[in-house]
Length: 225
Image (cartoon, rainbow, N blue to C red; front, side):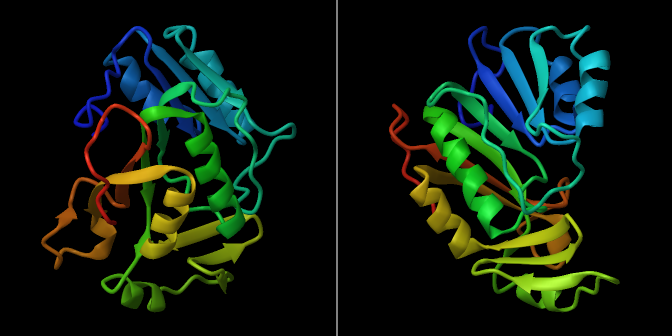
């Protein structure tokens, strides 16, 4: 998808940040596509970062992995950590299944961090569960044993301890992106919505949103979510 937006992922100067990289799922895929550029993976899961440092970086030295938190953490949906990157220094950010585990404050913080570090014209590729007229009934029917349902002004989630299973209102996400200088460029629905919707992308479970950092040379107009 980033390639469809004109991103030169294999370019020597291209810098991709993988926010919520885990043990390197995205990195393992990219390592087979390119041996140039720069990849930075960040997560709060120390064990996953350590595994990627041992097993991926030696074979792909252009890929680095760093823990964002000082102490080892698992899922921490109510905490957020600043990216150790300069403003406007990154060409693209991937956030795969990150915003499905955050509360409202952490969602707003990480969107702001993405907007801060992206170069003008850079892109973010993120997945989420988007709540709209089609999916609201699905959420009402969901049952999580031992989980507490919480509504926080645009973010709905089921919580158990530090683990959150979150869904974002589409208008909330669009407002927050605008606040951070991010313009929606592409939207593809995921299969979690059910096979009855003709717009569903059967190859992906979560909804996919690609947004562009305003101010670049690409003059394509933002599209509404």
